[in-house]
Structure formats: structure tokens, C-alpha cells
Image (tube, rainbow, N blue to C red; front, side, top):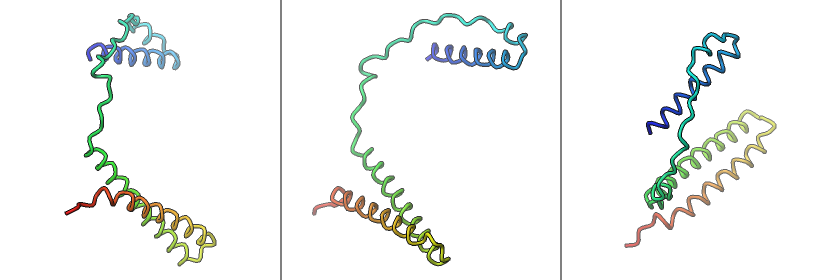
Length: 121
């Protein structure tokens, strides 16, 4: 972690020096210390590199978020279709068709998630 911070600080200093050179003030860049050669990056331990299997709770949260987003999107598209029709916008039929597609996708997502959420008693 300390070497990563040192490399990040070096990168920032180097970027500032390049910016100063580009702006035409070489005095700032000459006062910058030369970039030192850092050690090669250390490989992460094999255990840390392995991707842990996701817990079922993580999928549940993701599914709830997807459902929430899909529901909000369906409501937004339905509102847009209704508003377009009420205002007599020529594209109202096209907007309604798209809204119907979004609602159908939301309904399919709900049905797909329903068996997982059902509790047998």
C-alpha cells in the first residue's frame, strides 16, 4: 500500500511537471525531482487473487435493484406514452409501443423472480 501511494504521488508529480512544460514554465518542471525507478509491482497472493463466490444475499440485492429499476422505467415510459397521447404528439403511437415493450419486459422479470421469492408452507 505504501509503494502504491508512492507511485501515485510520483505520477501526480510527473503529470504536474508535464502540464507545467506544456504551459511554458520550465522553471517548475526543473525543480521537480527526477522520477526514481520503482520496484516492479508485487504479485498479489493467490488467495487474494481468487474471486470469491457471491453469496445468495448479493444476488437478492441485485435482483431487488433490477426489479426496482425496471419498475421505475416501466412507470416512466407509461407516463411518457400517456402524456404524449394527451398532448396529441405525432409520435404518441411509437412511444406507446415502446412503453408496452418496457412493461412486458418488467412483467417477465417479475415472473422470473417470483418462484425464487415464493415460500412454500
